[in-house]
Image 1 (tube, rainbow, N blue to C red):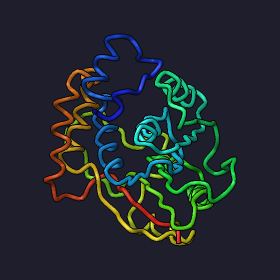
Image 2 (image 1 turned 90 degrees about the horizontal axis):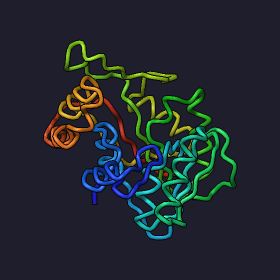
Image 3 (image 1 turned 120 degrees about the horizontal axis):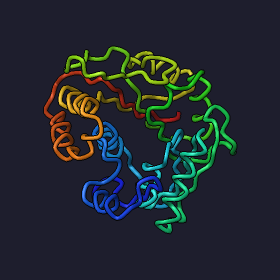
Image 4 (image 1 turned 45 degrees about the vertical axis):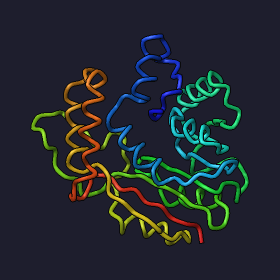
Length: 248
């Protein structure tokens, strides 16, 4: 089934929305879905394990991991986003996923609680990314894994002129290189075991087209997503960075 196909967002829960979601998944946004493809491919979940989604937004990743059998806690600073996650979980009768409002710099639970943590496009928004990483390290069990996705600091210039494409909305920092992300991880006793560049030429092009055409991107999502997945054949360095690290 497509990613997010069973996620009932209260803002888009009419019959036409449900049909579209069943056919094409959710969110119908090429950037979010290409990111989800990369992230879910690198998550090795075991049934019954505990997973923390730090900065979960509306909780689509939480929902997908719960459907794979994990026990998932989604944490986000936005109460509106958390309410949308609660709605989707209740609608699907999922009892192995929960959501709370909290700051990832001050997590309100004991340490050594999760075997996996994911943190997708969050660190660039935090005032102090080192404190965030310290807290995520505390949340993990020994030898637990963290998956982080962030924008790369040296981005490929826009491929479409006058697209109006904006890359750093609400970012405290522009992004990270592998080295600049490795430093705080190493200082917190994390060891990087895998890294991958995402959003290469095709993915970036599809993202920019979707940004330029506005709401038409939802109608053209299937085509744009096929174009974006051609990234698999690209050798360019991508505009985003995915890292998997293990707690020593």
